[in-house]
Length: 142
Image 1 (cartoon, rainbow, N blue to C red):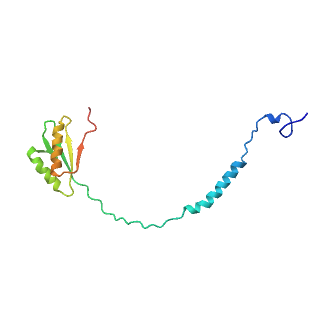
Image 2 (tube, rainbow, N blue to C red; image 1 turned 135 degrees about the horizontal axis):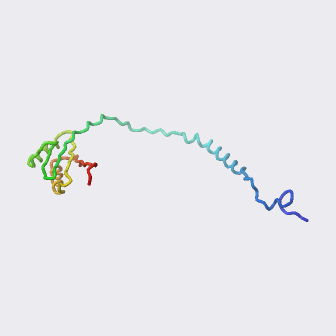
């Protein structure tokens, strides 16, 4: 009887091979290692560039904060001091002329109408106020 395939004959040729051949993997890893050893010194080549020099200045002082409050009845308060509607434009112009210009924080009651707020913002912008912020109460229940 003639045997076909496999060494040593018998029924061993029908079972799959259980070992993994790692020789090709080792060969590829060694080639990659040699390539990286050769190319690594080339990556450290530096290019000489004349970079501009930056001069640092002292940070400007934080500007003052002016709080303008408006209650639900439409009464105005400048830093918690009552303010007449007729004095508002003069206060805005006086504040806009200061250097650095103070920040204007606008605090409004939740029942204040949008029209009143829009009028205040328009008057502030006309007077030259450029820094305007809104103050809200995050802990207030809806």
